[in-house]
Length: 127
Image (cartoon, rainbow, N blue to C red):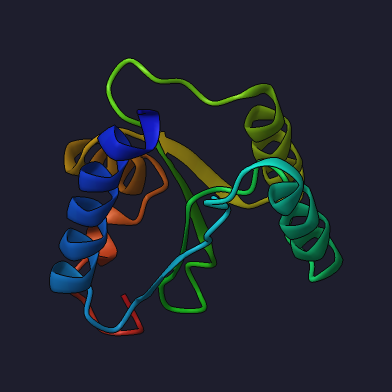
């Protein structure tokens, strides 16, 4: 099952960020619903009413305010973002947010470096 392959990757990324950036907030945006049949339809409708968005990235990372929020879509090796996820990523990028699909801690490091954040790692709020 796809989710089972992604969970260890996501856990490793969360642990990495929490250890290397203890001041940052890393939040899992739970979208999976473990129900079947009519029960899943009820839960999806309830989640949408509460503000859940289809395709929203797995992790919301809140570093210091001057850096701005970061969005990480976690995928297991060989898995790719769905159409709904790609659409949401495009929408977030259009709004000026930083979004990356990551499959490893190394991917996270590359995304941070690409966003010019690597030099701010382990630093104070001022950089």
